[in-house]
Picture (spheres, rainbow, N blue to C red):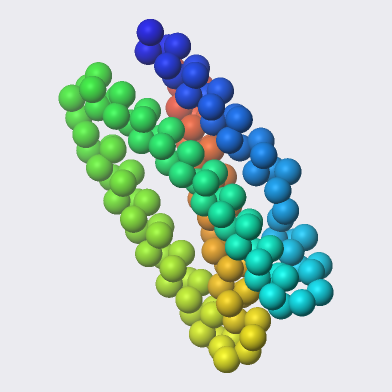
Length: 138
Protein backbone atom coordinates (compact mmCIF):
# COMPACT_ATOMS: atom_id res chain seq x y z
CA UNK A 1 0.00 0.00 0.00
CA UNK A 2 2.81 2.43 0.90
CA UNK A 3 4.55 1.73 -2.44
CA UNK A 4 1.31 2.58 -4.26
CA UNK A 5 1.09 5.86 -2.35
CA UNK A 6 4.75 6.65 -3.12
CA UNK A 7 4.27 5.89 -6.81
CA UNK A 8 1.15 8.05 -6.85
CA UNK A 9 3.12 10.87 -5.24
CA UNK A 10 5.87 10.58 -7.88
CA UNK A 11 3.27 10.67 -10.64
CA UNK A 12 1.72 13.73 -9.05
CA UNK A 13 5.13 15.41 -8.89
CA UNK A 14 5.72 14.79 -12.57
CA UNK A 15 2.36 16.28 -13.49
CA UNK A 16 3.14 19.46 -11.51
CA UNK A 17 6.67 19.94 -12.79
CA UNK A 18 5.96 19.44 -16.50
CA UNK A 19 3.82 22.60 -16.97
CA UNK A 20 6.46 24.67 -15.19
CA UNK A 21 9.01 23.76 -17.82
CA UNK A 22 6.68 25.10 -20.52
CA UNK A 23 6.13 28.34 -18.61
CA UNK A 24 7.93 31.54 -19.43
CA UNK A 25 11.45 31.78 -18.12
CA UNK A 26 13.16 34.80 -16.65
CA UNK A 27 15.15 35.00 -19.90
CA UNK A 28 11.92 35.35 -21.86
CA UNK A 29 10.76 38.03 -19.43
CA UNK A 30 13.90 40.03 -20.20
CA UNK A 31 12.72 40.32 -23.81
CA UNK A 32 9.60 42.25 -22.74
CA UNK A 33 9.75 45.87 -23.87
CA UNK A 34 8.40 47.72 -20.83
CA UNK A 35 9.39 47.52 -17.17
CA UNK A 36 5.76 46.83 -16.23
CA UNK A 37 5.45 43.92 -18.68
CA UNK A 38 8.73 42.49 -17.41
CA UNK A 39 7.49 42.81 -13.85
CA UNK A 40 4.23 40.98 -14.61
CA UNK A 41 6.13 38.30 -16.48
CA UNK A 42 8.49 37.80 -13.53
CA UNK A 43 5.46 37.57 -11.22
CA UNK A 44 4.08 34.71 -13.32
CA UNK A 45 7.43 32.89 -13.26
CA UNK A 46 7.72 33.41 -9.48
CA UNK A 47 4.26 31.93 -8.96
CA UNK A 48 5.19 28.86 -10.99
CA UNK A 49 8.59 28.27 -9.37
CA UNK A 50 7.05 28.73 -5.92
CA UNK A 51 4.47 26.08 -6.78
CA UNK A 52 7.14 23.71 -8.06
CA UNK A 53 9.32 24.31 -4.99
CA UNK A 54 6.38 23.56 -2.70
CA UNK A 55 5.81 20.28 -4.52
CA UNK A 56 9.42 19.23 -3.95
CA UNK A 57 9.28 20.34 -0.31
CA UNK A 58 6.12 18.32 0.27
CA UNK A 59 7.68 15.27 -1.35
CA UNK A 60 10.86 15.46 0.71
CA UNK A 61 8.91 16.07 3.93
CA UNK A 62 6.69 13.09 3.12
CA UNK A 63 9.75 10.87 2.62
CA UNK A 64 11.36 12.10 5.82
CA UNK A 65 8.14 11.55 7.77
CA UNK A 66 8.00 7.97 6.47
CA UNK A 67 11.63 7.51 7.51
CA UNK A 68 10.84 8.91 10.97
CA UNK A 69 7.96 6.47 11.35
CA UNK A 70 10.21 3.55 10.39
CA UNK A 71 13.21 4.55 12.52
CA UNK A 72 11.61 6.54 15.32
CA UNK A 73 14.08 9.37 14.70
CA UNK A 74 12.78 12.77 13.62
CA UNK A 75 16.10 14.65 13.52
CA UNK A 76 16.39 14.61 9.71
CA UNK A 77 12.86 15.97 9.28
CA UNK A 78 13.48 18.67 11.87
CA UNK A 79 16.76 19.69 10.24
CA UNK A 80 15.14 19.70 6.79
CA UNK A 81 12.47 22.11 8.01
CA UNK A 82 15.14 24.30 9.60
CA UNK A 83 17.17 24.31 6.39
CA UNK A 84 14.11 25.45 4.43
CA UNK A 85 13.49 28.30 6.86
CA UNK A 86 17.15 29.27 6.55
CA UNK A 87 16.88 29.17 2.76
CA UNK A 88 13.87 31.50 2.82
CA UNK A 89 15.72 33.95 5.05
CA UNK A 90 18.84 33.75 2.84
CA UNK A 91 16.84 34.24 -0.36
CA UNK A 92 15.05 37.26 1.08
CA UNK A 93 18.24 38.95 2.28
CA UNK A 94 20.26 38.12 -0.82
CA UNK A 95 17.61 39.48 -3.16
CA UNK A 96 16.87 42.48 -0.96
CA UNK A 97 20.45 43.81 -1.14
CA UNK A 98 20.25 43.56 -4.93
CA UNK A 99 17.02 45.55 -4.86
CA UNK A 100 18.54 48.18 -2.57
CA UNK A 101 21.65 48.49 -4.74
CA UNK A 102 19.48 49.44 -7.75
CA UNK A 103 17.00 51.56 -5.83
CA UNK A 104 15.47 54.06 -6.62
CA UNK A 105 15.81 52.93 -10.25
CA UNK A 106 12.53 51.61 -11.67
CA UNK A 107 14.21 48.27 -12.49
CA UNK A 108 15.03 47.57 -8.82
CA UNK A 109 11.97 45.39 -8.26
CA UNK A 110 12.81 43.33 -11.34
CA UNK A 111 16.35 42.76 -9.99
CA UNK A 112 14.78 41.38 -6.81
CA UNK A 113 12.43 39.15 -8.82
CA UNK A 114 15.20 37.77 -11.05
CA UNK A 115 17.27 36.96 -7.97
CA UNK A 116 14.25 35.27 -6.35
CA UNK A 117 13.66 33.12 -9.43
CA UNK A 118 17.32 32.09 -9.75
CA UNK A 119 17.66 31.10 -6.09
CA UNK A 120 14.33 29.26 -6.07
CA UNK A 121 15.27 27.29 -9.19
CA UNK A 122 18.59 26.41 -7.57
CA UNK A 123 16.76 25.12 -4.49
CA UNK A 124 14.45 23.05 -6.70
CA UNK A 125 17.46 21.57 -8.48
CA UNK A 126 19.08 20.75 -5.15
CA UNK A 127 15.93 19.06 -3.81
CA UNK A 128 15.41 17.13 -7.04
CA UNK A 129 18.96 15.76 -6.79
CA UNK A 130 18.44 14.74 -3.16
CA UNK A 131 15.19 13.07 -4.18
CA UNK A 132 16.98 11.16 -6.93
CA UNK A 133 19.62 9.96 -4.50
CA UNK A 134 16.95 8.78 -2.09
CA UNK A 135 15.09 6.84 -4.79
CA UNK A 136 18.33 5.21 -5.93
CA UNK A 137 19.23 4.16 -2.39
CA UNK A 138 16.01 2.27 -1.65
